[in-house]
Structures are given as C-alpha cells and as structure tokens.
Length: 284
Image (cartoon, rainbow, N blue to C red; front, top):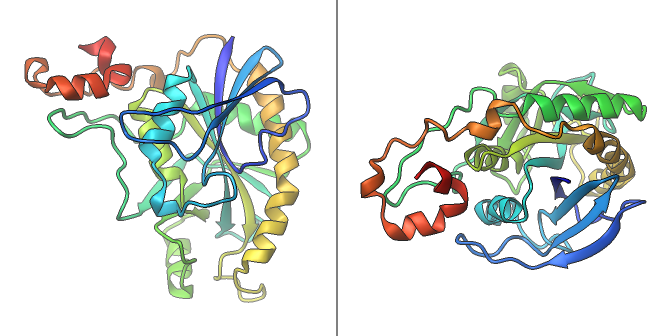
C-alpha cells in the first residue's frame, strides 16, 4: 500500500471515504511536528495528514518546525508528499479560486532552517527542478478531471511574512516572472528532496496580492472565505490523484542523496549518524 503525505489546513483530513482514521503523535530528532498526524486509508492508499500550522492555526510560518514535519512524514512511511497552501496571485489569468501546480521556486525567506545537514555532515542535493514531475503531473491531471480551473507550472515565490507584501514588492515579483506568492512551501520542498520524498504543491489562489489596481488589497477575511471554498476542491483533487500514483518510484527524487553526501563517512559524528539514520542510513 502506497503512503501519501498531505501537509495543509486542519480541515483537509475530513475527507469522504477516509477509513480507519487515527491520530499519531511523534517526536523526531528535530523536535515536535506542528501537531499530531492524522492517518487513514482511501482507495487502497494510506494517507497521512498534518495540519501545517497546528489545529486552530497557532503557528506562524516562520515558527514552523519544517524539519520535524518532513521527518515525521518519513517516519510514517510517506514516499509522496503534497503541500496544499493558499497563495496570492501575481498574474491576471490566475484568478482567486483557481488552483496552481507550480514547477519552480524563488526563496525570499531569511530566518528558517531548510536543511537536515550540518553539524559535521555536508550534502548538496540537486534542486534545479524543486518539485517532483510525476506527482505534479498527477495533481494537474486530477484537477482537470474534477473540473477545477488549474494552471500547470509556474513560479512560487516564498516570502518570510507574516505580513503580506508591500505594493513595491508585489510589483517587483511580477517583474521577476513569479506567478504566485506564499509563505510555506520552499522549506518543505527542500527538506523533502533531502529526505528523498516526492514533493509537489497544490496551491489555492485566494487573492491578487496587492499589485492589482482594480482589486482591493489583501484582506484576511476574504482569503479565508475563498480558502474554505477551495478545501472541498483540494480534497477531490487529492482523492482523484493518489490512487493513480505509480506503485514504484522511478523519478530522481527517490535517489536524491545518492551522490550528494561529500563528507568522509568516517568523520561523521556518531550523534549525527543517529539523528539522520532514517535519511542517510542506507548510504553509510
């Protein structure tokens, strides 16, 4: 049975047809994840959900323990991880309510750990194409089958937050060619790659950021309203996508660390080997 992780809002796991539901509390070598994981089965697929900001939305984007969240997915056997997230649109044709499955990232964060490595071990994974092409294609096809307005590809720019963009920043990001803006998926994608997980983003456009002259500036109430309307669509996309994922992974994500660890194995501290055993153990 394949295992698929889903990181997103706390309501995502309330899916029709999800069976054998249980909550699992984990500790990781990197501390505690955002909340308990909600595990269940759907169409011969094991789904593992994590409320990114904790139940009740208690954790700022910059406070998220991304390493623990991704490590916890690895502990629970996930090989595929879908990051569901609200975003602001930087393009006229990506209207509020549309879905986007991006294929590129720009990092504008400054305060967040985004690697499992350090403390005596160095690894450099390839990140030229930050999202799994197989999982991304599956999400796009599923969104099209359920009738969503979905955009395949595009650049997600990840900002620090928690404030929204200034108008000058929003205009600048459009000049850079970015398509949507959010606050969470960059670290998830980097850490998933290091953990050799297939990761893709299902972005839910909730607003036009603040660049659009004929639309009101970002208002959190409007964002939450559109986001709640899109939760049901995101659930349908996930339910349509995951049973069609291949039984075996043949993409490069599954072997991202194969040639990435450059530290002399004999010089890696034993404590680091223990902490990273789940991630690098097969290469030591």
